[in-house]
Image (cartoon, rainbow, N blue to C red):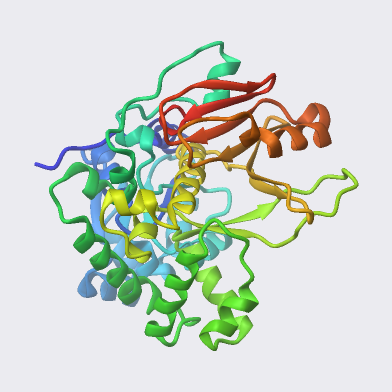
Length: 406
């Protein structure tokens, strides 16, 4: 039996089921949506997958009959295969508005699913997102707060040891690879990418040429952590710019990439407006970059982007898996001064730099100190995240931290 890994989202899901008639759980394929719902609600809810062709046909051809055959409380898995069910689910919910937790829906295509949900189930459904495992979930600390939250509470805790850092980056956060460490990660990621292209992307009208789309994905991987000039990407691949933009939207809507936008404030500086791109799963990034061994990942030209991706995705997952919308940006002036990540929390701005050197130095905090000076009281303590094991102050309001302590 495959080991179940506790998820940070569990208490949020529990509250949502008690508060809403329906709960919609979205996220990329294989992120653990079905496993999580079955683990929490198998005894109280019947489970139906809409992915098999015969079940899908029944749901599409006779939606009222289908819902009559599978009355609530019920888990309807992969609802994006029969989005026309949603108005009929609304009909049944409205007939019994006092009931809670009747319909638990999952879907891996945010692009199509959320359009239908917002149109038909507004006010009736809680929408939650489940990404691959965060490092805190993989390490057995699913409710561990972020470092600045621990400082607020006066708590100092040493992060869990995640073993070999670069090996964990190559593996990535998909639950199956963590629960079964003997699986061939290269074959797993190859299969995942192919399944994603064949099942999720092929069904979207915006994508015609799957081979060219795969080249587009690999081109973005090389640019991970960099400013993304979509016009340059389109030109390199011989694509129309509007096509490249549509494909980027597909990747973002299917939870494969994170588009990080710049932070703006009236500080009298000229700031860049171009976004940066990261892959949601660092293992997917390593696979697309052709990296197979931890030593190669640590010494490759992509190593900085890999570590930065791990930091961005860890913070994103931590917020999303608490049911919160993260407010994350980067900051860069036209003169080249940059802070890799700005996290906004309760009106305060936490600047975060990611550095490859495991030996923290004062110079690593230069961008953070300039940001703190320019933003004044809103900018609070900053952090330099590195792959080593040293915790060291780099100034009055800057702390160097190992990645594991994040």
